[in-house]
Image (cartoon, rainbow over all chains, first blue to last red; front, top):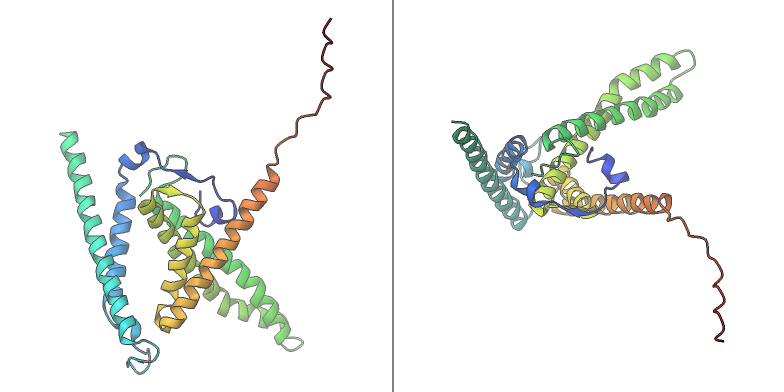
Length: 100
Length: 154
């Protein structure tokens, strides 16, 4: 079911079963890895703090602690993306190994 | 992420949500900006004004809502994968991150306010959805019979 549709018609709360957790979804892991890598890279640069026209950073709007926090989050997200990319490779390797 | 067989895997759900939100935004934008363009145009040019406003602004509304839907779906899937649980908190957390991510260029105050507002709004939607579900699924009351009189001891 759509994630947006489930806002208005929420499914009953449940924990995922062990089978669901053990089954590895290659496409989902790949997407999460890409989102982590791209989002992490974007957040770890200072582009999002710069003004679009002047290219300068407004330190009142974006104080230093905020910039460092966002950049730190970006690095963590990038790391998560890299970890998930490793999992993607692991899934692919396992599938190849199991087939042959 | 979850491998629930009762629904599509997450990448397909994300695409589905992005497209659905874009369509909703585009249709809503057509209605809204069509009426607005119609009313703001002079007599004789109202049809053209409505069409012009729709062509200019409806795709933008659709795009904005599509980005919101896609981001929300990405965060929802990620939160589900991390928490390994499906409940109302997923949408609230995903809404918090979506609101924050969309407002990140506006500075820390804007990001904070947008994230909290979006999370609260989704919390309200979830609450109303659950309430409606409960109202619709009222348990059928069993008829109450009077107790049978106990037999007197001989």
